[in-house]
Length: 244
Image 1 (cartoon, one colour):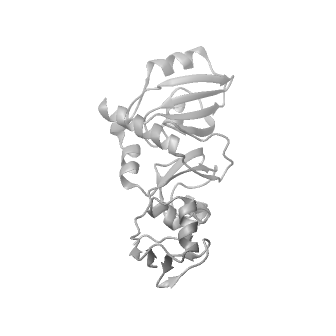
Image 2: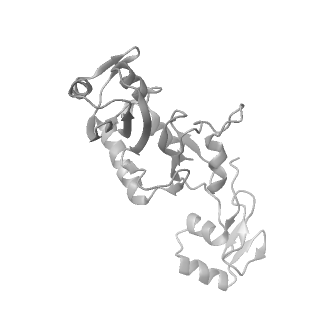
Image 3: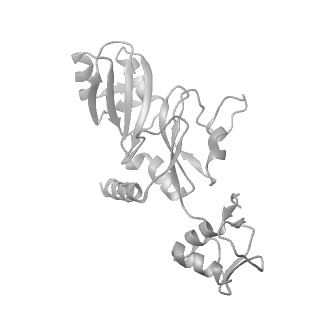
């Protein structure tokens, strides 16, 4: 059973029925809503979606877990696991800030900051993580040396690592030591290994986007729910990638 936090009756009915906020208010005012057999009179009354029984106009409202997807700005120095036996800061330390039980999609290494997506939708998580879909991811890379023309040419040509080739989809030079690159692979520490192979050390690495979902101006450690517009853009992208 998924553990859920207490939520307001207004939030419960909005997610489980087609009623508008105004209709929900009217139903409560008319005594048409009950929790565990007790008529409620306030929209802010809280309940456990999985444990409490809600009736609306005499009909039980069966709870269905709403699928959600959040974006999180992972700070540098945080382990991309929900728990860490060594007591280091990990993703699980931040979960008390969101009202849903979710799991991360993919990972970022400890020294990398930026966008990680969380969801309770297993099918969506599978599609985003599966190599078949090649979802593009944008990173900002700061190097220990100035960017050279030779580096750019080699990025354009593709680089072979010990576990296979790496292709850079797009790139843009931001400053003399910083560039944005887009890749569609998720192999372990692939960007750091890519530039190491080319004679550079990555001094700072930040993921800016996953497909159409962007980190934007989110603060470090901040959570933001993905909008319906972003979800539609993501669904469209996954459909196009599946058809390729």
